[in-house]
Image (cartoon, rainbow, N blue to C red; front, side, top):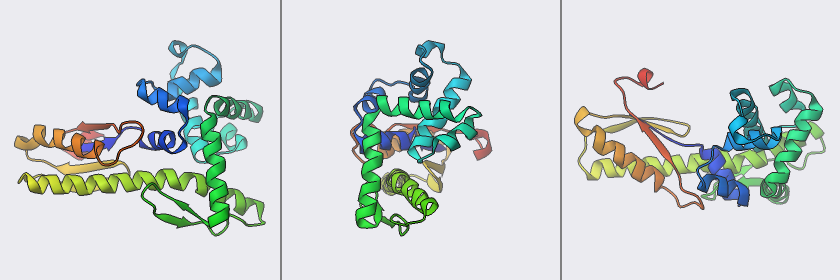
Length: 227
C-alpha cells in the first residue's frame, strides 16, 4: 500500500508564505498548475492544454527553487524575455510568495541558517559570500530548505503517528519505506480497508496548517503495480 501527500511542497509554500491567492486556490480545490497556466498565458482555464500546464508546473516549482529566467527559458525552450514575463506575471498574482522569498533570504543573511516548520536549522555558510555564483546558490537554498525541510518534518511526524496507531490497533501491517512524501506499507489483504482509512487520518492529521493536508492511498499486489 502506498500513501503520499498531495502537492505537499506547494501546500507548504502557500502556508509559509501566507499568500492569499494561493491559499484560496487550494481551499477552492483548484488545479494549481492549470490556474498558473491560465495566468501566464492569459487564457481561460478551460483552454489550457497539457503543454501549457507542464510549462506552468515548471514555473510553480522553478520559482519555489529560485530558478532564474535564464534557467526557466532553457527548461521550457522559450526566449528568456518570455520566461522573465512568466515570472513577473506570477509574482504579480502571488505577491505573498515574492515577499516570502525575500524574507527567507533576509533571514538567512542575518542568522546564517534557514529553519523548517518544526524549528530544524540548516546552516547556509555562503549566504553572505562576495562570490556572486555562491551567493545566488545560497539564496536558492535559503528559499527551498524551509519548504523541502518542512515536508520532511511532516512525513516523519506522519510515520510516527502511523506506526503508533498500527501497534495500538494490533495490526500486522508495517511500514517498509519512506520515499520523499510517500509511505510504502506491507498490508495483509484483510487489513487493506482499515489501514487505508488509518493512513489518511494519521497523515492528514500530522500537523495543522492553514489549509488541509491531502493524502492519496493506493494498494496493489506489488510496488511496481502501484507505479
